[in-house]
Length: 409
Image (cartoon, rainbow, N blue to C red; front, side):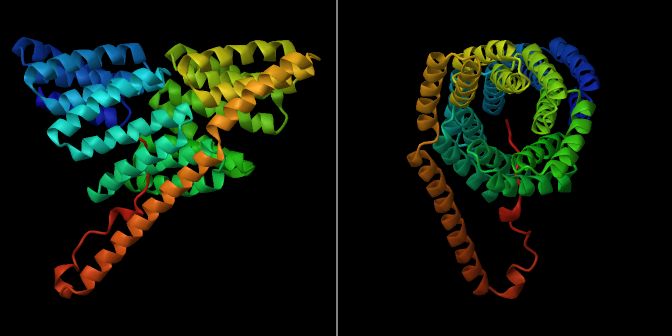
């Protein structure tokens, strides 16, 4: 059974999800015959992981719950931690941010009780992702910095890469693509060094987004094509949808709204199929804006209202802001100044909440404080090393400080 799980993992890591599922199901049959709670937990968990990568969120949630129950029977705290973490990722992906936080807090409680420092860092990284999606940028940055400190101390390059990627996304959301680009490039290098195709999809797509925001469309298209090739190879609908949305943006920037609308509609459909409500709201806003630019005001209003409803449901302040701004433009175009004013007023209040001077100052201070601490540590290490005999450190591994980023969730 152990060899079956290892073989299934090999296919999983090479994006061979269907073959991986087949092998995990065979392993499950053996685990059922043995009645071994630990291996039943392992099989259920691994199947859940595959479903998560395929964006089959309901199936993933079900198998994570089954895994959690078996791990609890076996007294396996590590298994319980990873089950709660997987459930948190599912809830985040489907836009249920409050439930995601509850799952991560359950996982965090286990790490504190069992003194699992690396796993505690993973919790903070994933909590940062939820806070970012909610528009709580300062909370997100604090969580990421707590996580990356441990990842660097333990020299976990892949986790450092994930976390740096998340910080890049934070700056992207905060309207600073130049700062984001620096983090994404660091993240990309680690994924390239490891030949990690899963992480490369995310890295290429995020680099394309940053270049698009900077109006560097040649670089954006190049990275986006690389991302889409790997996304189609993986069969992951979420990745494919995010690539299609960016292709929509690139065409909208070129004023080719017919093609842009087609990409956006495909994106909305994919996100709806997998139940990714938060991402669906974002895609609906983009579609509404493109329809408005194409002169289809009535359709734009309808899509923007759908986006606002979904954003309100998920609690995503950023998506609500974008939807309200779009609705203000729509009603202005349709000669409805009173409605335009009301939505503009709502958008202004949301913008003040998300992008307040105090929040931006806090983000910068957190990053600056972290950089100062890292520099002090580095200087202390250099001072200590200078006092040691040369033979005591000449064979040390390179420091993890230069490692890149990729999100765990």
